[in-house]
Length: 363
Image (tube, rainbow, N blue to C red; front, top):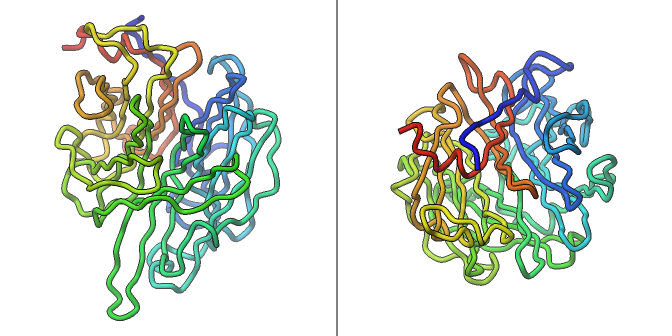
């Protein structure tokens, strides 16, 4: 294992016909192709407006990349929140997304003035072509839910074969207009043909989330906290994401109210050791570990995300959303938002391995 990190820009704002590139998501196909998704925001940096879903592909482990291709775009629409998941048994890449009108800001959607819909597309050729998106809103969104977001980051496939996508929603009480905010998951047990609502996290204020299946079969869900408790909120499911137990703050994971990412180390790495511990239940977690959106940090757990034994700063400059992936060769990828002044100037891909995370050279 090495103690070096390599970075490369994948998208730079103001180029390619887009004002801003945001919301990174990664997937690695069964053939080893790296898929890097993002939102291309045509006319501004805001969450509303005309936004397209874009993709770049790498077939050589990230050494070179295809030009950007459009996966989903509609004039007058926001097409966003990429949440890809790979079905290992079929090789199909599923991509869950959301749509809303370009002039529909989040506050308007929360008030019920506009709708937010959920869509799915798929690729059977490692992301070269994509199926026409199909709306699945009725199966994954309850009538009282207003705002809705898929991901934004990768979903997972459980050992059972179930596909699981972390999501979040807001609901409004028609009696007094009060709102509730919760993370939840959606699942498919028929290889992506249909999708339904899974478990919801009980902690009010939970938001964008990321899921990991640990070695004991537990689904660990790590959530952004809109209630501003200053820490990530975590919950666990013992039934494959159908229900979640009581949520709690992880005091070891500070956050500035931002999206984050997590992955498990593949089972093929169980014979590798870190400080005498096997990696069979290893989890990596990345987020801006600060009071503001900067200091993007990756952490390592060797006990199923119950404690964190090593950490390393990926980016000390402004940084925000990110996503993690692990290649078949054991390289760890982190695509993240960063910039010299604001964290939304470009999307960067970092490549490193566990030796870099656990190295004490930086202490």
